[in-house]
Length: 283
Length: 283
Image (cartoon, rainbow over all chains, first blue to last red):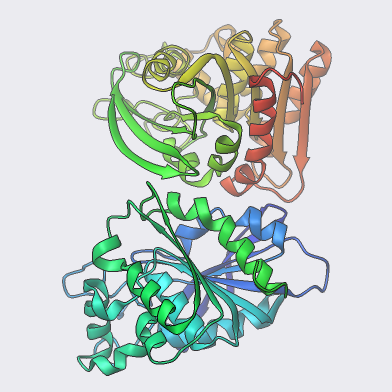
């Protein structure tokens, strides 16, 4: 692991790192904020998965998570959203919603994407092992959140590993990719036409198929231009209602899809996560 | 005035605007955050002047000022750092520390810069008039802060108009441009070789020449790579001590010159400003 930069912030250290990923077969860059802590302490880890077009840098610069992480003693990890570099296939038209910056947190099975697009394995196996080895992380206390495509990732990963993640939350998530254009393009392109293989990468389908988690927190901007076509929080509300999952879904008047929305509610989410990570149960 | 974008954030509105400036003879872009407020209310205004290479966007995206501004009821205005556009002269070598992105908050008298580089008039006259006309601003309650070159601007403007600005503070300011390379290049290039004309654009010289202000707040990263060569807070400390100005200057161990430093201490500065803007005197 190579350190690209570090800076002191809110008493802790914001770093950006790069390593050669065996999962993706590329170099991968990610950021980690480690809050101030006592020597030898092991701290809970919050994963943040970013949305379409983003790298680790967007939330690192605009997410406004460090004050709350410093107060609450949380490590904050932000991976990239796809493999990158020479030889990594992209959308044939260079579209923003597939290929580079749009890995959708799946392991692609379709060529030419199967070679490098292994974001599921990268985010759920390889990077956690690296974080556990290189940072003062208590890997028995992890939680996960994300935005848009990354909200999709956070919900599907949280629902798949409910024993690993004590909390899962999302800002404006794609809750049912099988039913919306962004998701249909991505899951079809990465996983092929057999929609049965899509279900474990679709939060609503996972819940319908029996996946459970204690609670979910979702904030959604009511002025988000992607709300009705791509995000469809109503589908998550119905699935959670049917399954008896405690979903706190709040529509926020006036808010759009941007980091102005995310940063506004970031501290609320981190407090919600911290209450679960610190063993206090539902806050 | 043209609205380029608006977004809801922390209950208020973050906007980016453009207008044709008569001072600079160019279009100028700036950002304004208006916090949530009662209909008809007039709110105090905090000016934030940015540093070398920046536009309005750096602090708008990375400054983490909105939560505190929303809590304290402060309008936050971030101008650009120079004129821009076709026909605007730049550093002949394209250096980052002069010309575009480096207006140094002076009215240039030297050609070819005298035509457009009128940032003093722009920031102290033209833009305040526009803010007062277009936003719910109480122009009897203004304060000013800035970073690096913008810290220089905030200190010199605050010292020049102590009756207009109830508070002035800075992050890692250039306190004595006449005595450091960045400042000597800029003041010489914009104002010419007669160093007497530089003194009203040098905070330390202004204080030596009799300018006074009730109090100044300065934070400076101890790991700032520009500390000893360009920033020299010791010179401000000595001048304030001699003049009896109440300077709170804190060296922050481990912090560099970046927005990771600024964002960490932004809320502290805004609370300090709010105490003065809301008529409570020194906090």
